[in-house]
Image (cartoon, rainbow, N blue to C red):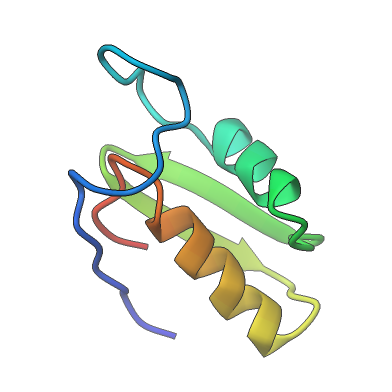
Length: 79
């Protein structure tokens, strides 16, 4: 699967008001769990505003849902 682009300035704020702290894989994993998605076997890494999702997946459908969930976080420009 290739690169998915998102609007960096929109999406869900994970940290409340004020300036957003830097995103990290752990924070995004927590968001995925909160949404009830199964990211078992997936590794999430963050470099600036780009997120990489890699590893084994439960299903292609779940991988796409995780990508969309991560891309819908404020500050993420590409997954």
